[in-house]
Length: 358
Ligand SMILES: [Fe+2]
Figure 1: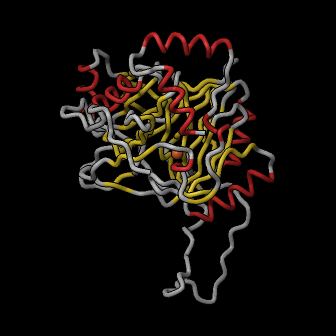
Figure 2 (figure 1 turned 90 degrees about the vertical axis):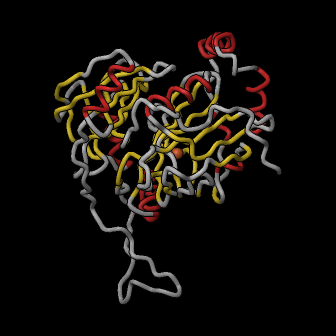
Figure 3 (figure 1 turned 180 degrees about the vertical axis):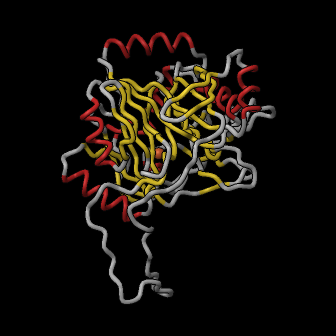
């Protein structure tokens, strides 16, 4: 199938971004049961670093700063996420641009941050002076015997089922009803640049993958992806595992404990990661991945046709259930409101998205 021509002109780096973020730091959720959340996330591979009756903090591994905060609440809700920027000067620039002040305090470690809301109401926190980031992983990465260059002599592979060793929080995917507005906000505010976009036959983008602008330093193909739907929602968060064996052994561990599998194992097309998705007890998807692409800032954006098949080059095709929203009276009201509010959201476009993605 020929790739349609991109029909919009706003998918590009901002010529004057407020700042350029340097690291995805953390996610924030509300959950009604901290013990249940901790059981799932521990089996997924995260490590508890602080727990009180009201708050649970987890890190990717014992050597890294916290990357996952859960506040106890009656409801299960995604609140937002945090990035690092390079300096206090950048933080001040951002604060001035958005008419905010710099908050200083302590949350397991001292922080200086600016708190913004994106156009969808997600809380986006920018932190200066990144905390130390080191690895405390339980094993080394696998040594692989390629057929023409074996590196493991007189030694066996041993990867029993175990929680995946996690290197870092890698990316998150958000859904939005106001696509153009949201994309422009992220490129201008955080200096993100598009790596790849997937489009409808009309040329309208429905999923775009953004990376951080670190200049000549290679960085992950995407740190945020933005998908077009009828409502603002959290799609998934992804955690980089030490290697591909960590994904397989981690899947076995999660299966043995009865958690809900969502999609995988497979290899993505855009970003190339080997992936495996799991649902937490409230239906939020959490991804293990390894062997993703890294790009420098000068790599040009790719454009390709969107489809469920285009989400993986091998492995399970994305199940329709994976992106299907729960249809309730509340979501129907949101749909009607958003059709009125966002000029780039139409019934025709939603029908086209449903057609190509299922
Ligand atoms: Fe992902």
